[in-house]
Image (cartoon, rainbow, N blue to C red; front, side, top):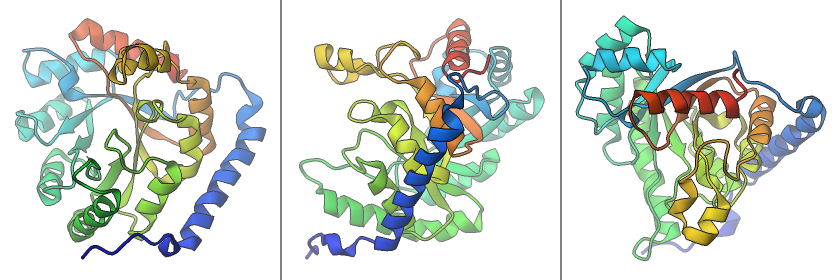
Length: 292
């Protein structure tokens, strides 16, 4: 029998620590981060793209080379991709494009994903903590996904691979405080956050999530979202807009990322296309991240 959820079981210390981090982040923002209206992130972040967004029949090494010429420094691979990992590693060495993360997108078969990550030379894996729907309750999903992750964590830790929980449209972990609590309850440095800027814009503001998640954020996905299109055309239509032309306040996103001293990879996860589309995405990233 599943035990009913008891709010008293919340780790009060973890909650208070999270709240303190959020308050500190806000205080910092009100001082140094607000000092400039256009705080650039050049030199602090590296641009990447989800590899399967690039639609091309060219050999892997030529695709890597084209992405580098388009302005990208890295790619995010996928566990379900058909490409030979050894060929991708060889292409990365030849071109200087780095494979910086592995998108797994599930809590199933995490050890398999860890093995693939090791072959690719990757030390982080994106996972998604299940899904809540009419057949799976919130409480059950919380308990079950944590149990699966706990079982896989020792193997990930032994291989020095960090599992990053991403905020996605799975009807689960709908606030930054809850996401922080979910991660902190593992009491392990080998599980952290992969923060997606666009995924929260449907029901929240990304600049509110960043100071709460703080240094748990180890990777960032960027995409745009338009609430007007959401209201007039439907939920998924909100994504049908180019970066910089929707509802996200990218200036505030940059300020909050700077306030938590974020440095590292920022990966575009948007509508893909040919090499010209890759160049356009790269330019959009330069604009919204103030990299130019």
